[in-house]
Amino acid sequence: MATISESTSWNRSTATTSWWSRAAVIAGPLFLGIAALLVFSVAPTSSGSDAPAKISDFYSDNGEKNFLLMAEPLALVGMFAFVWLVGRIRAAITLVDGNESRAWTAFGGGIAFAVLAGTSLTAQTTVAGTSAFSSSFEVDPNTAMLFSHFGYVSLAAAMIGAAVMAFAIAGALRSVGRTALMRATYVVGALSLIANVFVYAPLVIYLVWAAIVGLAVLRSGHDQLETSRQ
Image (tube, rainbow, N blue to C red; front, side, top):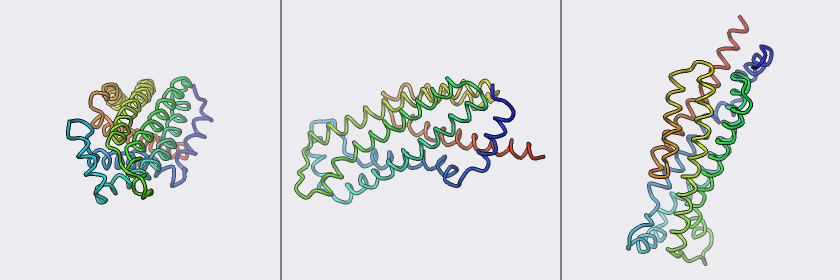
């Protein structure tokens, strides 16, 4: 278990964190969520016999294609901020729960999610980006379908990392008596495990949960610092 001096030191660093650390708690899940919404709300379907025609029509329309171009930088910034959030959660588990193995398991799951989710969203926007910045590029519907499928599978794999992170954090919450949040976290982890069936709803739920957990980490550090000063 962490010593009192170690816990106080962490509480101070948490409470006096930079504006970026605070913003990253929301920016990571928010930007990734917006990027996913842009991709999956406008990208053409890759199933059905008429998929090639729909894909060709989609990429000939610059208005719709531009939504995918907007998603790409949002996904990259969101991935960067999410890694920052995961790092702060790892530090919180180490110093509050005292379980290094659990802390690094949560960290590994979160990093796997960030990398694979970023890869997924980038894959979904690759064809749009190439056609926008290379005038000689001709969209092949089969290539677009390949990238779309790769993006979906990568996102389903990302949700496995999300499940690992959620279950590890649930264990830490149980050890410190945060029963309500622990139960919600177990539900998030279970939903993440079945995301290969339908990935979008579990993804949104996971991102909202990640922001709540991040805010709880920052708030807990602030409250404990105020107590230590009294």
